[in-house]
Length: 252
Image: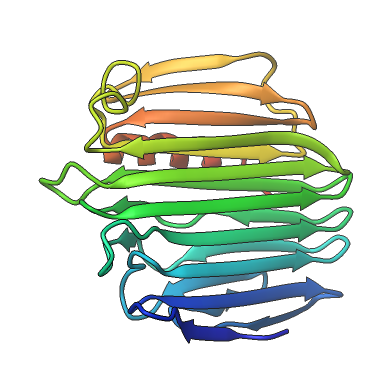
């Protein structure tokens, strides 16, 4: 495994890659600032952001590999705050790729990501699951700090089980776009969250709800799996995601 961190020519941006591998009970990893990995439990790793950011132009990558029957929970030490770089049009990106062998399980649940005014954020996660695996992915996006409208975000998730596509979706948010913040978009809400579950059939049929300051809906997926999406106030969305994740415990 290798660790790479370098400056992007002509900018102050950086490119960094990190990898972790859990096979036969042995966890190994390599990382470089600003993406640093810390083992915080027998089957738990935290992603620690070092040096602030990410900033516009930063290109970050993380590759995760789980061997047969392995279990791993990945968390983040704090919220991610995306800020603009020197080039106002440059996007910051974080590509996560996970490969899960038969019988393994991955629980990806970082803290929320705040997209500040003027920032462009393009995260993506790709899940390649063998048959008989489980994965849970939680994401919460927040438009701006307090008093800000928020920047632009295009968050993509792709998932397959046994080489069969299960989900390919991109969520686009922009606090400065009247259409995306209007009634056809977030309806003025500052936060959007999602809970993707693969390998677990979950409840039958579609579900939806309207709690205090948040609306949510769950859609079943082939594979099996389900996708819950919540839109509303930041704390309310976080509450729905925490409640739904806790309802599935113990994940292992």
